[in-house]
Image 1 (cartoon, helix red, strand yellow):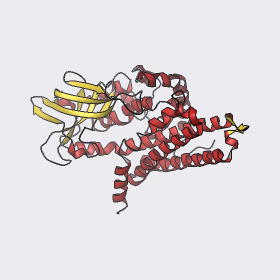
Image 2 (cartoon, rainbow, N blue to C red):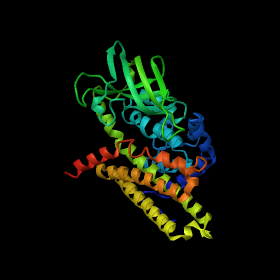
Image 3 (cartoon, helix red, strand yellow):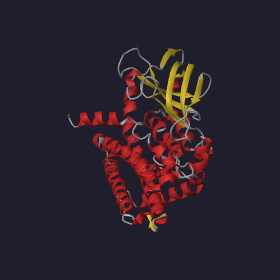
Image 4 (tube, rainbow, N blue to C red):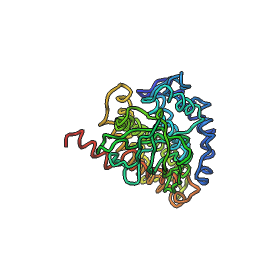
Length: 380
């Protein structure tokens, strides 16, 4: 097959290796992990042993010395786990919890948190969303009060992926009484006294632990301030582009897998004396779905190329996130329809895929927020 820019032969070799590992070590357990509402922490260790937790991080921290393209390959391939929750838990660790430490952390913080995170020994989470503050980060109410040698944190975060299992939470807090975006800081909060988690039940992503985390008089030492005091909004914005690109890549991977499985089902399932794919209505539907997959991949890869080339592709990334998440949900619904009554049953993968895909138009910035960003970018 011809190489697809911006990927090279090296990236294709990584894709084959990662896919083989995922299909051997993760996919066979997807159904059980969904039923248990949990996947084992040992999965992080297995990924680390394959070098998959630090693809874009420097070798001096235990990473592979690669870049965002290597991470993009893994993010897309994780969809083949067949469990949106498992992919989300892994993705939260590598795509949203550890990047702020890599970009803004001191050398000491990187040694304490990034190194063991890459080794799969410590699991991270990002704590921004609150019961009263989602996309409106200026409304954060979790506060950190200055005390000798550090801060005392009180407040609550919610919808936090890895919120039960995480050993540390990269947490957005208010450190100033100033309103608006000024006065937000980030602290790395270790799980310990005063930190409690309550697992949330969800429509999809059952294998991931999504939680509300309460902080009650939690002492955080001075050395756990991440980045500059009262400048945390810059940190929030710095990783949004990659987080949204990662969501687009994950959706593209999930769409491709769903199409492949549904097309195979349609070729094998007989109805009225011939395969489902022999009926024009189904054949045309599969053709439309293939077109949707290809379109979403083109838009996403274009944004990815611009991102790795050092552009600030706010428009393209926003478009990719907006397009792929809704398209993925719609594709899963159509795939379920093609499966008929079987698709509505828990024993079929497509029932789970349809539920998992519903989070996409909400998480990482809702469709409405994406359209508002585009409205500003397009000077509307």
